[in-house]
Amino acid sequence: MSGKQQAEDGSGHQARHCEDERAVPMKTVCGVHGAIVVTRMTLIVVTAGAGMFSLLGSGFVPVPLQNATSTHYQGSPWGPGETIDGTTAGVFTSWAVGKAPPNTGETIVWETVSDLASGGVLKLDLYQQEDVASPGHSIGRLRLSYTTDNRSLFADGQGVGGDVSATWTVITPQSVVSTGGESITILSDNSILVGGQSPGRPIYTFEGVAAVGGITGFCLEALLDSSLPSGGAGRASNGNFHLSEFVVSFDTSIGSDVPEVVTNSAIISLLLIAGTWLSLRTLPRK
Image 1: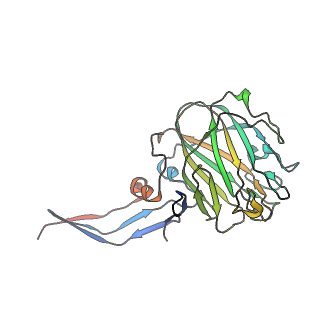
Image 2: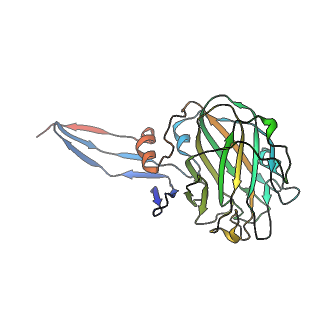
Image 3: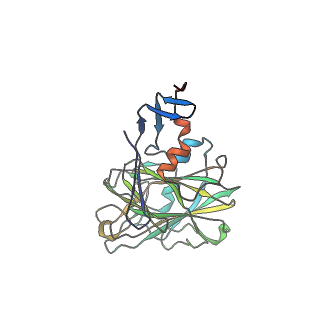
């Protein structure tokens, strides 16, 4: 198997698709005092559904959410509250945006039940596993943010025309993977564009850094894109989408002092050493 990184010309966009494992053949490295023979080296590359920070730390803890609020939904029973009901898959268990083209971008926000005490690493899982919808009703372009505003200033619990206004800080994507194996492109505005195959009901795992504490809420913007069906925000044939659950986890043990953008090559060289097994033998110089 192999991992790969793709970069698009001149735009700064990066498409990432990672598979399970890369095995590196035996190699001899010669030096002044002898030679080191690497008899076996295995690099564990980020697997679909497991972000890069997930490989490093096991300290992720759930972040309870409340008061889901959206700018639009297609009607009962598809309200925003379905995204935090604890049901990741099933029937009538998602926030759904269904409109006849022309589509409009929509936003959903959530409050945290309590403030996140300090900066750390965020893991955001987007479940798109509504059984009523035909396969492929996943979000095609999105952007994620957090706020430290007082909870009284946003998220009024409404599903249509809800109050989603706050001082939002866009989260820079450090790692984005999907169980569906789609191509992921990180755009210059730190939004994510999903392309390639359109699998049945994928889960997106997004990881990024929260450099500050006191987070009180999260925001997901479903953004229009001309590359998506009907110019919508979703990957269904009419540009619609379903989000069945939004799950946030937080880890302060890894720390927030990491580069803003991490490429797959950096993941391999800096983060996957823990998954590497080396058998080394020093040979005397001849």
